[in-house]
Image 1 (spheres, one colour):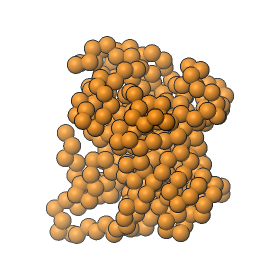
Image 2: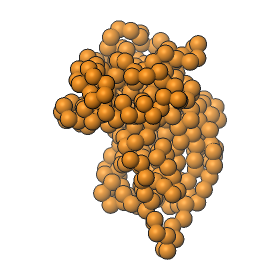
Image 3: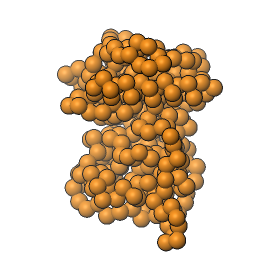
Length: 312
């Protein structure tokens, strides 16, 4: 299996460009369903240890029947499929350009949750036009073990997020263990309280906000991803969800820029346009860099042919 690795503002993407499974025809959403049902062992093979690690996010290049799309992308991590992934879309665009398969300029990708537009500005800089984002619930209150009362918003940015009003600790690399523990407790409390996204969808991302480190940034975030990993980048879908909440509160005008800083210091530049019905179209700009190419191998004698997860 041929892959190309990159990072987007610190968060890794492994793009599968050859040797993936035959997912048949149909929409990317349908192909994603078949990947989950019939080829989940390959997902683990690609991103889990010993070939990957807990922070690895995969993107499978697949066929699209949409004439205005350059390709289809299916996203996943060590726990399962993702609906959309902003940083991985940026990483995929940069990786395909590195391979000579995507020219500078505007393109579209089909994802399991809809079409996204990408503008490849140079070899490393990409702006994505995400699927519509919106706030589902405002000022949700719940009790969280170890944190006490917590208030936040539930919003969709391509994945479901709980955006917490107050961080339990300063958002710095030194506090990652405390932020991980708090965000996992919060996610468990959401599940226990029956708080969901639309149509009962699980809220699998938790986002804290704090003061930025860079003068040009508006805030710094910490994002718990599905499983036991945190986003090293500012999170494309999380920034989209944040823009939706800012727009709903009248705190950011359409077209104005919001600079979101991630916990490792990487930055995304976000803006939006109105989509109607309380929804927005987020535009997220960031940088990605190719870190390597590889051929993944599976030996018949390998005791871990499908990988494993050592995360607690």
